[in-house]
Length: 76
Image (cartoon, rainbow, N blue to C red; front, side, top):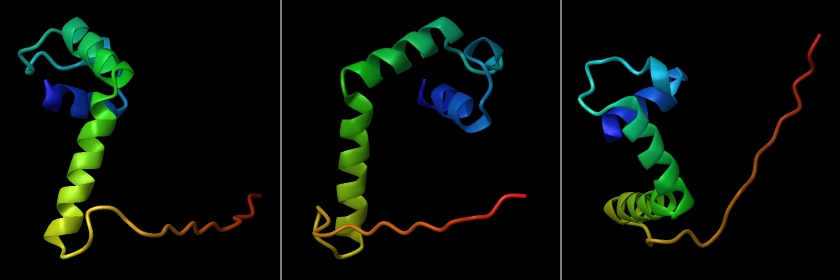
């Protein structure tokens, strides 16, 4: 399931264009993805992974400050 969702999000293909190599039907993958997004599961996964990666790097689980860097790019 996670591999199928990752494939769609990484490649940008439509849900119905999901290769048949994945054993889960595209409708199930799509519906579960949207349900997980609505109920906050993706955010909880992200927060947990971020904390674990920071702790593995010897940092506090939660960042104490943030930084925003932006650049202006001229287009022709």
